[in-house]
Image 1 (tube, rainbow, N blue to C red):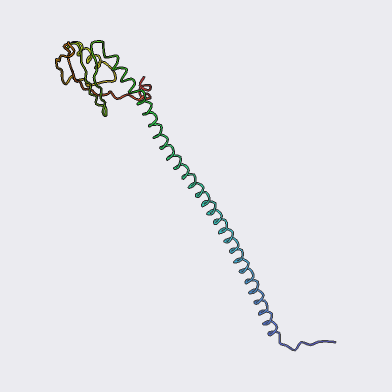
Image 2 (image 1 turned 90 degrees about the vertical axis):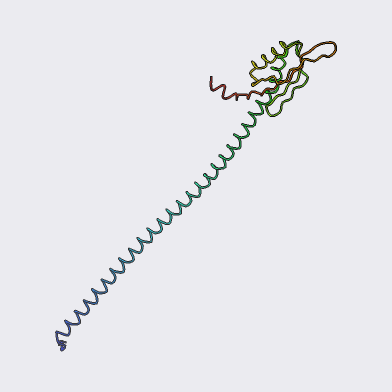
Length: 190
């Protein structure tokens, strides 16, 4: 059967135009939505990557802070050990110091001089003794002055006394203990 289109042609063209415009608008909307979705996904990936980088940096900072704490602890321990070594060194020096000092004193005394007292207080030494004559006392003081362990040897009192049928020269002398040079310094200066 034959059909006859009774609708005007313009109405048909209008409907087709509207349909085409709706199709183009829908297509444009889909393209815009896809573009926005792609940008969102790209931004999300970038944010995630930056968060991971920040987390890695924070972990590294924590590790470095732990290391700095250990370094500070080691420095404190090193300082403490250096102090202990200094005390040990001083003890070593002081251990042999009095023995050397008394040895030097004994070698300075001859058979014409007798010591009555020897007092050391904070490096100051007071010596009381007797000698057969002034020459023996002077000889003792000269040997004491020549000793490396004593300095500033001074005769403070000398007095002629009699005792047990003999005339002897009683004397008092003062001096200072020579500070011992550390072993490490003498070795490095050679």
